[in-house]
Amino acid sequence: MDAPFSIDLAPPFLVVAFQREQRVLSWSILRPGMQMARRVVWLEVRNRDLPCDVDPMNVIRARVSAAALDDAVVLVTSRDIGSYRQAHVSVEGSAAWCVTTLGLSNSERVGVRLHQPPPFAGTINTLVHIGEALSEPAMIEALSIATEARTAAVLDAEVRRGGHIVTGTGTDCIAIAAPTGEPAARYAGKHTAIGEVIGAAVYKATADAISDWKRDCADLRDAMEAKTASA
Image 1 (cartoon, rainbow, N blue to C red):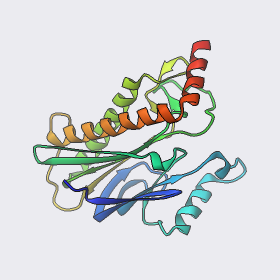
Image 2: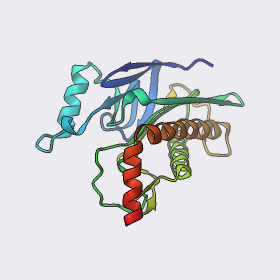
Image 3: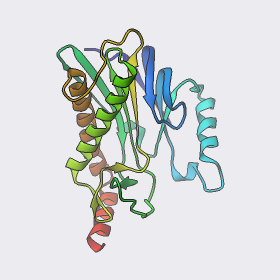
């Protein structure tokens, strides 16, 4: 099945453009909450782009505006956006697509703030598109399922920091997108085909992205594990 969106890698932006306007639910830096949007974008930044004496939101807004992307839901990452991973799963007529970028230098264990400044801000930014309209409760439930699948993939990777197996990062973000129109589904839990495809797509894309991060950032991973061993 062809994806209902295009992906344009144009550093420092990764742009996912939908064929039609979608309902998008997220806690993104720009345009959070429930929004109508045709684009979700990732902005790649580095520490040098966000010095301590400037407001990072002003920098991000300026860059997004200069690129004429003000209408987009915006995710921000220090991970090389060219490392993005995607996955597609279909079950019983339901379909989900996941696009994610992932870094774990900014990792945390839920419920335990590690209080260790990371060398740079790695994060997990995930977009999930569902191929059918959902009710608002189902959108929220889909967000929960995507979060659970992302966390399961991170836990299975057994990355350690500060003596803990991490569950995510301190700045993760997930966006759920679905078509407009009469909702085809009221629920999106794990007992449903929609919940299954969301979970499977997010898990696969996240697991693949973790493998890439472990390979690309081997020195950083080793340093994190060394700190764990000495803790």
